[in-house]
Image 1: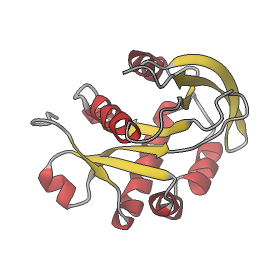
Image 2: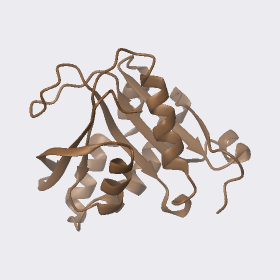
Image 3: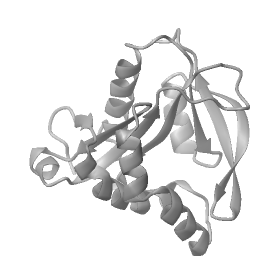
Image 4: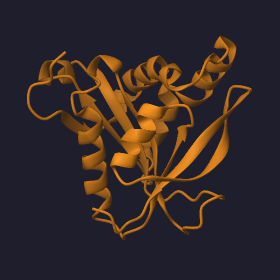
Length: 183
């Protein structure tokens, strides 16, 4: 589906919590390896709920961005992509004292290749450029080669790994970090 012009990006509001949770529940399984349905359901029920997104939206340390397919879809709260940023998020395996974190970045597969992920990344980096410079980190499933290549294009490098639990299923995520001096 073509997206005319630049994708529309805005900050999420409380009214977006339920549609965000619905999109997140649909997209999360696409970024994981084969995982038992019960483990996926447990993770989604705990982490991708309207209440969880509402908490992110109201927390001043979080920024939740979203993109709609077009103006009409946006008016109907039809969300095709989202990103969760944590302004200050320490990780025990990383040396930076107060890095930012890109916690989630998902785009509906029907809109892959239309520049939406790039637009979200550019917008997010622009928002963080107004704050004191610091590294940005994220975690990504080690088998998600498309996502890893995307993050490398934006200056992120693999700096370690961690176990990530999807329900009771331990999976290996890479930790990637981008230094603040990169443009």
